[in-house]
Length: 384
Image (cartoon, rainbow, N blue to C red; front, side):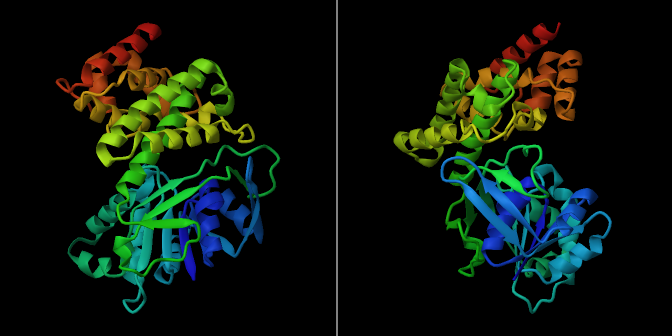
């Protein structure tokens, strides 16, 4: 069996590629970073180091890498005979890999079983987004192309931090915890072999629970930590005020999840506690600057802050803590992240109400709008 995985970075090697390896797949990593591709091809094995309680080392073998920028045809050829195709490239990059997957499906024999395509991104229904990009490319040929693939949405969760200096080769350090939920309906019973993954009938509750708890909590910690001048995620949560702010934020997102999906307050309280313990793992060398990057995406309409806050406001639920976290995100400033630089420039040059709608997608008249205007006004006053 063979799997093609787009994105040979730390998440690709330390999470998705690892589980595919454990499922018995030969893993072909596809990436545009030539030094990384060369480094992977120079090794016959790498080790995934899970650090913290319950951790341990796992050796991965049976892999290789292809440079999709220099040799896209090689990736097309691999896809034409693969069993599984996965991604961990970021939601905004899916449109760039869609043409390669489309070409691979065109080249694929109709006699082969369908290619299982799963986008493993921090976004709701990312596989649907990828499928729609491929369908647009196929046009009238889409029915024939679609018959060669199964597109299944997933929800993935594992903290893969910035890697420690001096680590060997392409080894990866991760946390012990992971979750990979996959919708099973599209497979019609012919499920791919991925040990550790679990297949569910309705993926939406898993996606939103993860996005609005793990992603919201992680980014909240980063933004409050950065504003306080704290470097590491675990150290930020050692600050009682930051811990309280993150807890309050997640209590508000939990209220939305209870209203949407019928989770009980007790199970979400347990889930929040588990998530915070993961963030507090002192052996994860994770920084607020890595976790907080791309604030413009994270402040967008359907992402981890504005998405649940808008729903909460529409339901008459509390949004005070979420708005406080938005305020911390607006203050995220680092020269190393282009989106952070752009956000601060927008705050300095754009009229308040126009900026609110441009960044968050929330327009005047929405019950969240005035709170967002207040948060932006406060940050603009600080900059002035």
